[in-house]
Amino acid sequence: MNNESIAIHENIYKILPPYKDIYTTVCAVKTPAGAVMFDAASFDEDAEGYVLPMLEALNIGKADLKYIFISHNHRDHAGALAELLKHFPDVTVLSRSAALKEKLVGYKVHAPEDGEAVLEVLRTVTIPGHTEDCMALLDTRTGTLITGDCLQVYGIFGSQDWGANIGFPVEYMEAIEKVCGLGVREIYTAHDYHPCGNCAKGEAQINRMLDGCIEPLERICSLIREKPSKSDEDIRLLYNAVKEVPPISTRVVGAVRKAILQGKM
Image (cartoon, rainbow, N blue to C red; front, side, top):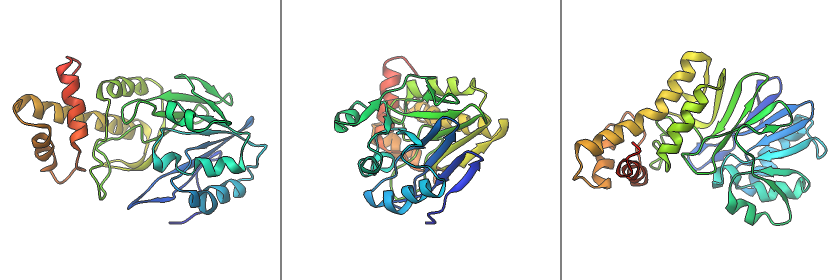
């Protein structure tokens, strides 16, 4: 995988470190008040091989990098964080993960609220669903929403069951509705999500991506209602029989079933 950064906009850049049989994404966002790094790659060697060279090429030094924004506490997004903090010990980590905060004793960690301003021109957007701590970053200058894994669409084709990987479907659908009202003009995701790839530009593509986030959950819900005696594994197999979409895990089926039983779906 190429370790040169790609310009999304004049002040937004991304790099694609490898992860298993896919890639993940790390972004750097520059503002007049300083810079934010979005996510921290997967492994310690990613810091030296990908992230630090990107920051150096963009002239983002210790005095410039104000925040490391962790979209959620999964290995492929926060795995190299401890290594990076050795180089940037005074940076503030933005994370809504209580587990990550407990791990980072001695460092500055802040859990931002939904809509909280970051360096004046950026805003946090909480989008629980994939995990409880998931959040995105909105650049108000360009209407660019950097989402990490927040928007799962139909999921990822890969070696594992990465389809519509949502553990909190009710909260997810509520958050998707919120995103629809933010006036977003572009969306960039951490991986290639079926069928939208890693970005959506303009109203039509953005609406397709957001609709695609809900459709798999609606299909799982319909299968459960149509076949109430079937187990979560049976429903998983029925869903996965359609080879045109990434396969789901029983965890996702169980989360949807729980929401149905609670009368929330």
